[in-house]
Amino acid sequence: MNYETLLQPVVNFLHCRTPDAWISVARRPENLPLLLTDHLVCELKAALTATWLIRKYVADKPSGEAILAWLKPYEAFVYRELPDHDFLQAHKNLARNITSTNRFPWADDLVDKMMLLIKEELHHFYQVWEIMQQRGITYQKMTASRYAKSLMREVTTHEPVTLVDKLICGAYIEARSCERFAVLAPHLDADLEKFYLSLLRSEARHYQDYLTLAQNIADFDITERVQAIGEAEARLILGEDSELRFHSGCPVL
Ligand SMILES: [Fe+2]
Ligand SMILES: [Fe+2]
Image 1: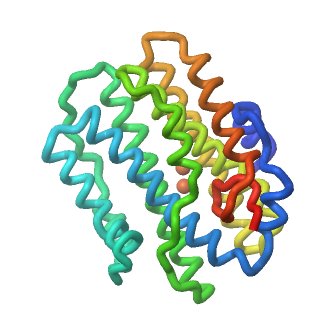
Image 2 (image 1 turned 90 degrees about the vertical axis):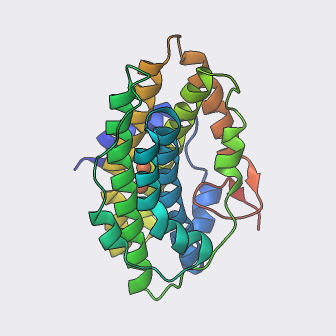
């Protein structure tokens, strides 16, 4: 696989590269348990965001409840530290069975793209959890990074721009994840490097899927919104941060 070709559109989309100041802290071996734990939670959050979009805009009530049920074992583990580790079983039960309320012409496209994303993010979650198990890293709850919350402040509060903005935020979060996996990979041991590079293809597609949905759903030119949210994203990445997280700014520890 040619990683540079894969990464090029992602880097062009983002307004800045990850600063060396982040890499120099993130690469320290003592920070690996923290990064893997945060990565694990980010995978679940990515799945939850897509779930929220399907439930809010497309699914009827029974379908919405079915998706929530899929996510339950993961949420119980991450947010309540309950010892349900049967993620593989939960994963097998994921099926496309969404009944749309058919309000929007783009409903099926959103369901198809977001369902694929949910499945892939939960698979990544399982992979990260497995790596943590192999390395004897016990999951412990930690505070979320300010990144996603701060980015969401850029979201316009009236529809249909709200949905479009949320999709653009999704595109930036996925693109940044992809870029961070690529910059961190060469500083990790061989197994982790291989794993992180293996994630690039799906994360690059996730960013494109979010952006395509935003373009298709909007009945206006989204260039300005993409620009504004991209600038806000870059400010968070280039600014100082009090803690190291996967999507943090430059850690001042
Ligand atoms: Fe992922
Ligand atoms: Fe993703």
